[in-house]
Amino acid sequence: MSWKLFALGSAFFAGLTAIFGKLGVEGLNSNLATLIRVVVIFLVTAALVSWRDEWQLPQNLRPQSVAFLVLSGIATGLSWLLYYRALQMAPASQVAPLDKLSVAFAIVLGVVFLGEALTLKLAVGGSLIVIGALVLAWP
Image (tube, rainbow, N blue to C red; front, side, top):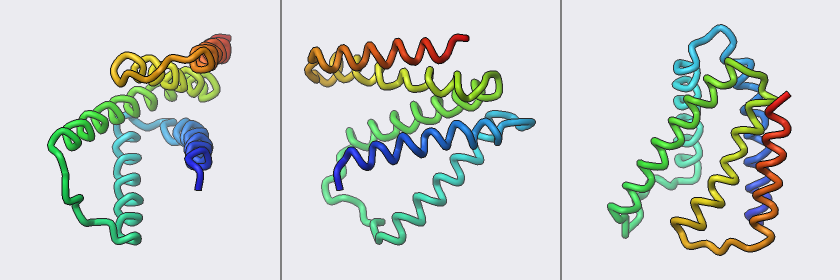
């Protein structure tokens, strides 16, 4: 399967996340809502890993890889905590576009820290995402 199908699937489920999350945080502490979400994600992922029999540790597990995965987990957790709080305070149709500025942040961070090439196509596309997010987020 192409990576593009996985990316589109991710985008679709991220869209559902905004709607279900908005409905779920009504009358509930956003931090508790995030905890419930994390537990569900853990259970679903553990079930998938079990189903696919993938519990084996890689032969060459590097401490650097583990450290970056821990940092990624921290960043994800902070993102989700802030996202659910924002959903409590504003419509999903305004929160989700600003959340998608993560694409622009990923482009800049990829160029600066990973040495990825900043092409004209990437710059124009990233700029359009920023403009679109800002147009959608402000009434």
